[in-house]
Length: 253
Image 1 (tube, rainbow, N blue to C red):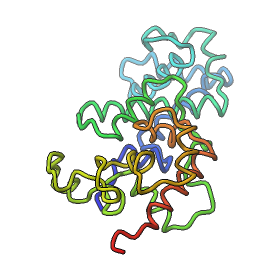
Image 2: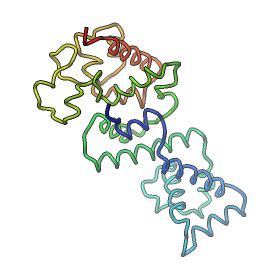
Image 3: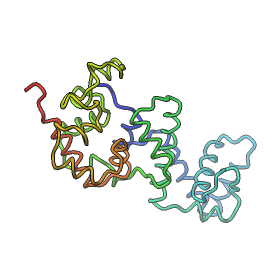
Image 4: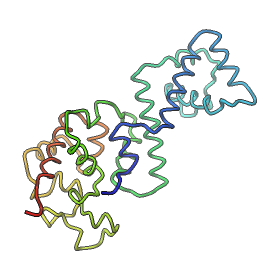
C-alpha cells in the first residue's frame, strides 16, 4: 500500500505538525506574559521594541494570534502597547483549539497549492481551509471508538484510496487514469473505480448502512470533509460498518 497523503493523515490522526504545535505554545506563553503583571508585560514590550530582536518570529506569532482573535486582516496593525491587547491576550481552551486548527489548515492549504496534485485529500484541505467554521476537534476524531487495530488500518487504507482492496491498485501504482483495463470497480465492474463509488454507488456493495450514510452526507465527493472535519459519532460508525462490509467481500470467491 502507498503511504497516505501526509496532510490528510495528520488530520485523520489529529496530530498537528510540530511547527504548528510550537507556534501555539509560543503564543500561549507570550499571551500569559502580556496579560500578566507589569514586570512580565514590560519584558514583552522591551523585547518587541528592541532593534536587534532575536524574538522577532515569536512576536510576529503573538501579533498574528491577536489579529486573528480581533478579526483584523493584517497583524501589522497590532500595537502591543495598546491596553485592549491585554484583554485580547486572555484566551480560552476553545479559542486555542480553533486557532490551532486555523494555523494547521492554512499550512496544509499552502502545501497543497504548491504541490498542485488536485487529489481528494487536497480538495478536503482546501474546502476546510476556506471555511471559517471548520475545526479539527475531538468530536470529529474518527478513531475514538473501541475498534481493532486491523480495522483502524483498513480505515486509513480507505481514506487514502490506494489499496488493492479499496481502489484499483494497478491504476494508482502506474498513475495511468486512462487505462481501460484498470478503470472499473473491482466489485461491480461497471462504475468508475473510486472510494466514493464504493461507499455510495456500487450496486455490488448495497446495504442498509450505505442508505443511511447517503441521508447524512450532502456531497459524495466531499465525504472526507464530512468524516474528518464536521463528522460525528453517527457518521463515523456508519463509515466503519461500510468499510468493514466492503472489506468482508471476497473478490477471489
